[in-house]
Image 1 (cartoon, rainbow, N blue to C red):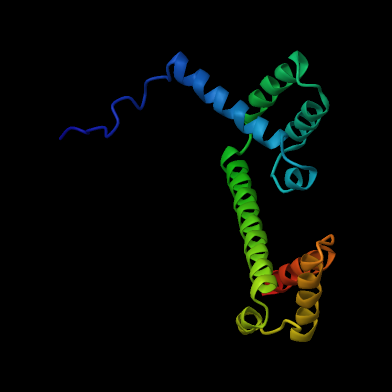
Image 2 (image 1 turned 30 degrees about the horizontal axis):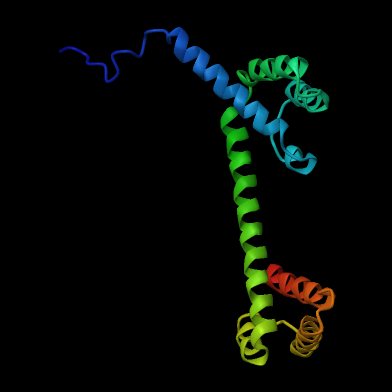
Length: 170
């Protein structure tokens, strides 16, 4: 009985092109990590040397020195746990999308509340029952008054903040 290999090319070394593509992909991953904010970078699982190299790359201007430092980061990424780093980046991206969606929904609620008033307020308080109905009504009235008098929308901002806090609490 003969043993069949599922992948005939399993034992062959990678081509030079494939190795270069893999190295460029690791360098791009390192660049994405380097472009994160300080709080985002803190959530990425990096070892000490790689973290120091990325911090140095962030301080360098966008010229030849940074390019070479990013090549070094790509080299260090070869020994790093790239799957964990990619997963952490994806989690950050999903959190960012969810936060953006929440802000967009809060803007929609604010605009509806200012435009339609009490009818939409009943819908909002039905969905977010912990909301202070009286406080929201005061903010809506003040925002409508500001809008009619063409004043700066400070009450609309307060209303947006209140709506956002209710949505985040849920």
